[in-house]
Image (tube, rainbow, N blue to C red; front, top):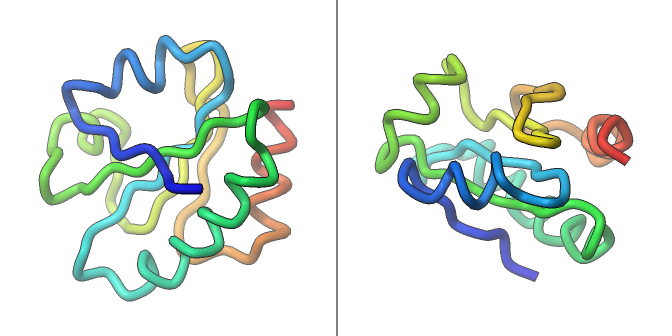
Length: 106
């Protein structure tokens, strides 16, 4: 299952107005840890279908939203629910850490 590609223009509707929690992966094409994290997130997205939406935003192509949330290091995962940021983790985290993050929204 692919992660939904979002941008500065689609962030409001895809994330903040989503009826289900959304995990956003802030990443860049040149980022090695981002590339290592991506398959893990794709695999996890299949397990959470219908419960949590998985999305990704390229920080090089989209400057507004990452600046708004103070993204300084990538990959950064931010969990949103009901239009608000619940929590975040930075770096290529193990699956268990990401599942603990997701549990906060369920």
